[in-house]
Amino acid sequence: MIRYSTLMLVCALTFTACGGGNPYLEASLKPAELQGKDKAWFEHNWGTPDGKAPRFFGGETWTYYRIAGGKSGLPLFNFSPNQCQITLTFDKEDRLADYTYSGC
Image (cartoon, rainbow, N blue to C red; front, side, top):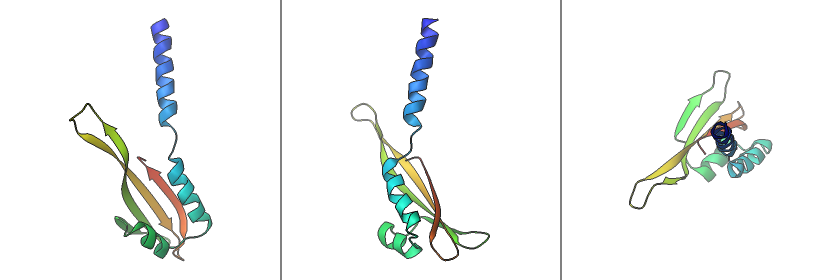
């Protein structure tokens, strides 16, 4: 019974620690959405996107991939980077309408 309780506590703490987002990325994207930054602003400040796709009702979706930290094993072992995917959705007027990110 004690082993089961300990296992459940460890699992709960692990999932809680991994459940948060990236507050730094969230802080930079939310004001950009509220201020209505356009595609030119992102291209100037973030560079050319890694992928572009048109949206059905107008606008465009841009995707950026960035390295966001990572994990390393024992000394002299490979570093495993975390690849962050940032998706920006622009409306018909080329203004940021929405964003998502994963792996950050």
